[in-house]
Picture (cartoon, rainbow, N blue to C red):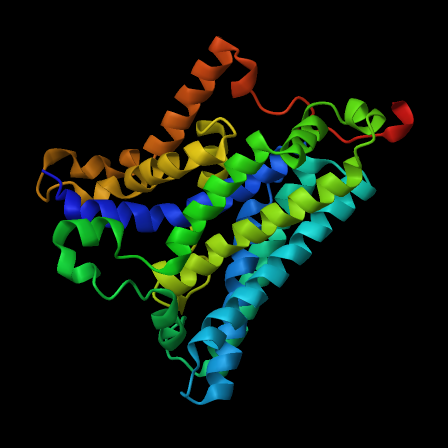
Length: 330
């Protein structure tokens, strides 16, 4: 049997990058922009945070101030992710380039960008291994509540995480409320459903597409920062992110474009992603562990089929998703 007290915190830790990426992509897609560059954005967010942390650790010479140790990497991560969002919007909204091609190109660019600067920092640090360790900065990001260990299983399951875990949940819950309950959310949904009608009603379509996409990229970039500084204990190695960016995009479909539902869905995905590690040793089906890694994608396909068959409008993607808006055709 799986030890749930050990399994659930690992699943939640695995889910946080997915939740950041999923929330950012939902906000982006609600405006009608399909950003397949989220894996690249998360990669850039991670490496920019590493660059900021590395520079501060070198400059502080070990005398690190907590607010700066956290603030500088976060600021660098947000700026890097913002620039990726601006690049995507300039190409797809202003120049009306194909969104699918642009997103895939940005993923390739983001991974290459991260590997280039990651490799450069590894050389600068003089490490004998193909990694760079920022354990001092990581200790600030991964610090949990001091009384969590005294509360037994409750503290371990609910209180044993760094602040970015709780920030991811807060952002997802706030995004769900804003999209569903506020005038800004109504305008955003109108832009995603029918930009021509929204434009005729006086809504600035271009502004909403730019702001939502850039904000979505900044949130997704925090997923990359969390992975390096918290989940990986401050250790950067090239190509270490795996397929988490693509899982975040799949999660958008699974949670039917609802950020609040994405909180639970990301934990489920995080658990499914690592469940093969908890298969008891010596069991005959251990040789099929690669098939267990496919479970999140299989579940997503099943959900996609079910939601398509039920054909409920609230469970469908925005009507103009992936389509460029030509105001001249209005």
